[in-house]
Length: 154
Image 1: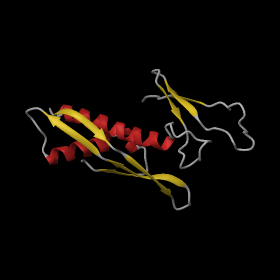
Image 2 (image 1 turned 180 degrees about the vertical axis):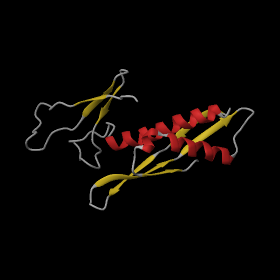
Image 3 (image 1 turned 30 degrees about the vertical axis):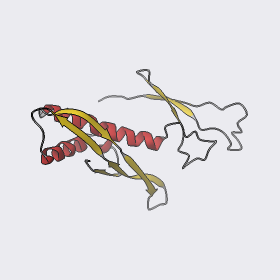
Image 4 (image 1 turned 90 degrees about the horizontal axis):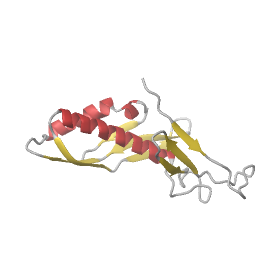
C-alpha cells in the first residue's frame, strides 16, 4: 500500500556523558512534508534534565496519532452522510501500565471527542454513535494497536 517515513535525529551534546548514562534524550522528529517537532522521552519515564518536558514524547505522539486517525475517518463519514461539522475537539488520553511480564505498555486509550454539528440536517445520537463506530473500525492506527480503545463522545 503506502510507505510512511519519519526522520529521527539525535546528537550527543557537548558536556554530556554517554558512557555514564548522563546525556540528553532530546531529539527531533522530521517528516517528508517539512514539518518537524522537538521530541523527548516523557519526564515520567526519564527524569529531567535527561528529558525535556517541552518535547513531544512517544506516548503522547501515539495518543495523538490514534485521535487524529479516528477524527479524520469520523469527518469523512460524517461528510458522506451529508452532515456538517463545525468543530471536533478530542481530549484523548493514553494509560500506561504493565503487562503480564512486567513490561510497560500503553494499555488503554480513551478518546473523548466533542463534536458540534451545524446545518439543517443534524445527526441523531444513534447516528453519531454509528459514525464513531465506523471511524473506530476503519482507523488504521487503531487497527494496529493491541490496546483497548474506548470512545466516549462528549
